[in-house]
Length: 193
Ligand SMILES: [Zn+2]
Ligand SMILES: [Zn+2]
Image (cartoon, protein in one colour):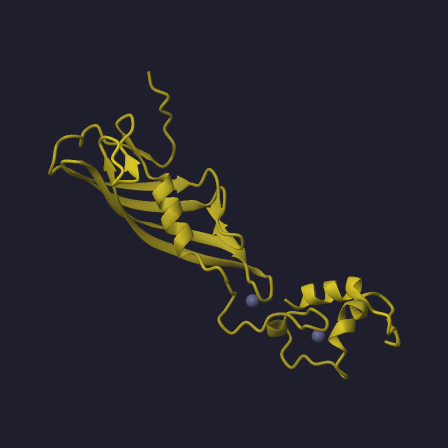
């Protein structure tokens, strides 16, 4: 009659249902079965999340409030090294006993599934432009080295940015190739980002 399958994010609430005023506190250590995040940073599959949740029985359903802690991993959008940032977000949702369009979640098979709300709360908290440090200088637009690792980095003579991509190729001696066209300069702009 039911296809309920427990996951690391599901909690039984049968001992709270229809007992308004009852409350439980639960703590969960979750090994994330499937990572989530935005295009540049996220909580990775197999990483750990710690959840502290408070479940309160109300007349309409179970109110779940709590906090999730973990780490999100991605790369610095300026210099591309790996970054790990702490995630610490709070959530609060009512799981209604019966379908109600006022609420996004329902108690299902005597359980609440915290995965979608934890996922949403975490994803909303993630930066779209993660950086390794606030003053990251990025990469040298001419040769691509990470500028923070190379203080005082400079080139003897500035290379025309249109030719920077060519300079990255082996053996460019004299930059007298005036017939640079779109194909070469498109990779140059990619490197500069
Ligand atoms: Zn960086
Ligand atoms: Zn350089």
